[in-house]
Length: 147
Figure 1 (cartoon, rainbow, N blue to C red):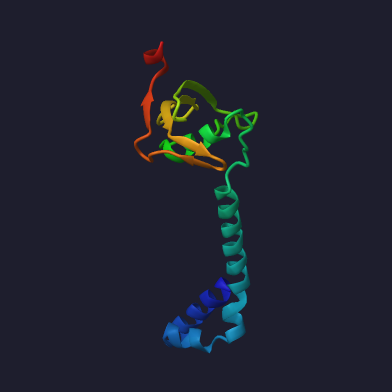
Figure 2 (figure 1 turned 120 degrees about the vertical axis):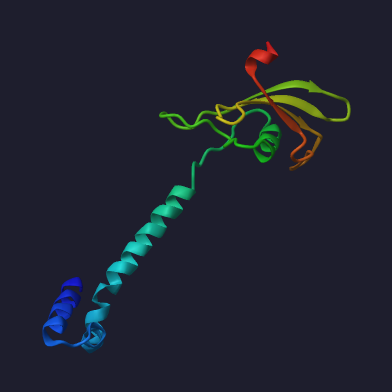
C-alpha cells in the first residue's frame, strides 16, 4: 500500500500532475489493501488493553470477609491483596475492639505504597450487607506508632 502511494507520488511529480489527482486515480481496492491490517492491529491493542485491565482474580478466604469488604471499599490506594512474584498475598486483618452495638474497629494491613496500615471502623453487618461511613471510617497510621 505504501509502495503504491509512493510510486504514485513519484509518477505524479514526473508528469507534473497534482498528487491528490493521482491518488484519486488509484483503484478503490488498492486504497483499502491496508485496512484489514489496521483493523487487526486495533483489535490486538484492544484485546491486550482489556486483558491488562482485568487485574488479579484474588478471592479473600479469611475469617471476616465483611471487614475485608469494608476495607477495600473505603481505603484509598489499596488493591485488596499484595502482589508478589509467587502470586497475590492475603492482607492481614486484626480486630482491635467490638462494642455491644456491633461496631468493629480493626487494623487492616496491606503492603500498599499509599497507606500500608489503617485503622478502620465498620458500623454494623446485616446478612450480606455491611454499613460504614465512606471516607470517614479509616485513618492511616504506621506500625511503629502502634507499638
